[in-house]
Length: 319
Image 1 (cartoon, rainbow, N blue to C red):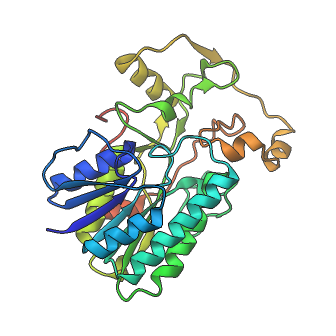
Image 2 (image 1 turned 135 degrees about the vertical axis):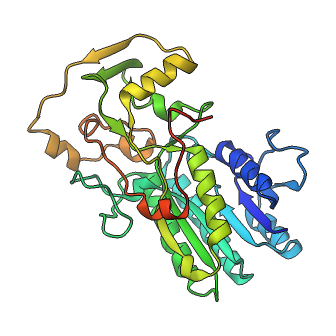
């Protein structure tokens, strides 16, 4: 039975990730600064408290357990971090990641999965789906910059490893049946918290059902035999989640107030100028809604990840 360490394993995504690993027959160690009841008392599950010294906790784990894989969820939005990221927090998280990568390579962990973000991509200038290789990589948010730096550090460290398979999963904002904050942020005006749509809500957003992310990681760990499987993957739903889908989802499962139908925004000569000016709100707020691009239908190309794991979950069947 293989041993998997899940950092940030007792938070929103971590709970689901650990549960999926347990169902596949792994021994799971969930490292976090707080416990969770989600997987408590399940067979082959162990919670490891991460106290003030993250490095000491990692040393204890690496010295006392033989790890077959690490799924790095700590320092991830919607898991153990909120929607606001300061430059100071990003710097601390990057240093934590760097230490973890270095130690993982030192003990030759066979598999490593880093949960990154689609916010590493630059503001979109084309309607073509964003690919992992040839898309512009120039993040504007603190979170995107932090994750891109971690990607580079992991790739650099992995070159010292003899045969470590690494997967970097670039994930857009996530959701599930019981977590809809990111969905709501697409139809709510932060200025007055009113709900709105343009037209009939026929425009969409690239999202990722948490269960698609979990299943991708499970499939990767099952298939990645050596470092030839190392790659960067866009992990996301196959189709865009439309504004009307979000409204119907909320009406079906929860309560939602009045949704105002707004006139479609007109072309503004200042839009291109504003696009070059990055506000502090956009830099720090993970859920920042850019009204100038809300109708752009920006997509990720997930064909590479889809070869590892067919994505079957979306807003219509999430659980």
